[in-house]
Image (cartoon, rainbow, N blue to C red; front, side, top):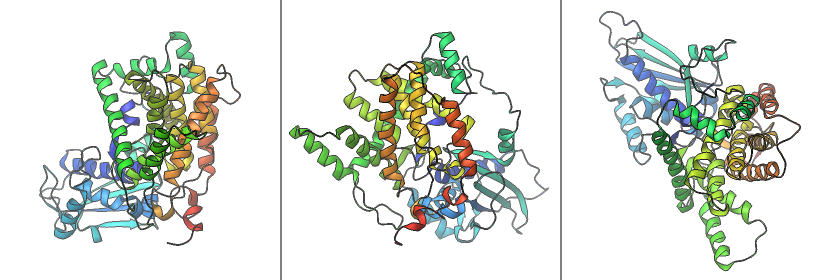
Length: 466
């Protein structure tokens, strides 16, 4: 099992990796399908129009998550890691005005978002809660091509056929062989014991089986630069976040107060929690505003890991660029195990799979930088994940704002606490990380659909109507 650090951490735009980045990527993928040779085109037929429909959680919370906007952007050829957030509104306005799309390398297609993009709340698709359908039609309206895609969390997109392969009892062999192919935490610890390597070193060896050390380090630095930049933008932003809830940004005001306390050297017993919280909130306020963000492992949980890294660099003696790289590699190793054996999708298992996974990854990365053994690192990840079990995903208004922004702050606090607890022990503990991950998976299966990113239960319906 190999999931690259660059699959776990993907640079994109907010507010959601599964509901924004995934649909945008799916739309681009459909354009590639149209231009490709993998389908039988009737003689003389040409694609003249495109239609799309969103299902399940994408339909229920798609307005708040900007899913429709993402589909429009994707059908104009925009990718999450390349689109300019400052130009998105004008691109969408042009499509709405002309009722046409002109993606690069394609002829012009008819596409009126008001009628050709349907939020279908009645017909969920069978494979996953985040389903979408794209169809291509000729000038007479006859359907030439249909594709179903699922956004399975963290910006990952698969077709219905690929999803079935992922769910099969005999998954296909990886086309990326690696020296340490651990699929479970137990295997990871066994390989570390046999090799004498740290988790970060094993993950580095796996990555370098497919790229040079220089490419890997440059990529890791690019991820942290994007995360750090997101914190900085979030700390400078002001005003009301979009979406209609009229939630005001708070990170800048809180940061200014903390800086004043810092300059006055005032005693503050909650100092660590305060800095963690303000960094995490800065990221998620920026995400909620549709800015540039990194999946960590999702957009909804994007603040936990950057907050703990910034905290580490500010308060942990000796933390440097190499520390950040080891942190990211270790966190990605844990994130890959969680995704492989459970889920990082709020629409699939609730927020335990998003902020819970982010906290586990963050605790592991921090423990690694603090000199933890593989056993202590695994223990840190387990503590953090265990105390997110059962957490629902019930965003008010379908927006990644309430309770998501503050939840990232608390996730970062839990991550640091988990790392500290683990470092006080020798790695021996009662509940293995693998058992905790399996519990999260089972809990997600048992969880009522109202609490899995549909905004039909929980806080989403029990707060004062806006």
